[in-house]
Image (tube, rainbow, N blue to C red; front, side, top):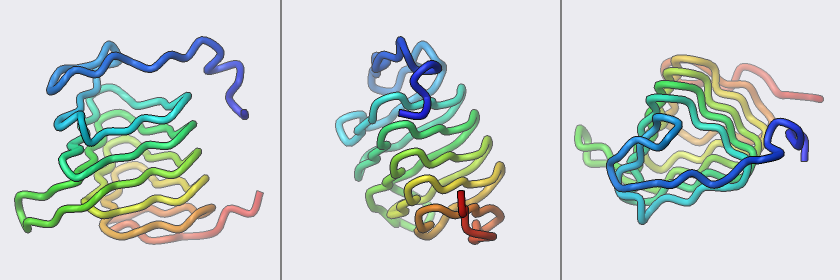
Length: 135
């Protein structure tokens, strides 16, 4: 595991319906929420898991992000999946039905409306793949 030292004492946070965790992020519809090991979710992020949100191991989500499995504006719904070791920049929004691939990076202030493949950098409104990660 890459982040062994950083997450040496990592523990699953207590998640209560509609209440801030001790890290100041919130999940609504927690029964549809799956959280992987050694994740890092920034303060003031909001997750609506009505139709499912799965966050795999070692995912990092910046502060003030929003992840929606349902949209009341256009009535879209669908599971959101954040694959292992992906990173979501601060103030980004992920809309229903989106999967972000393993190791991919989403730049800050992005709006993710469609799937992002593994091992890429994407950003913008809407988020678009800018380049592959070749490391």
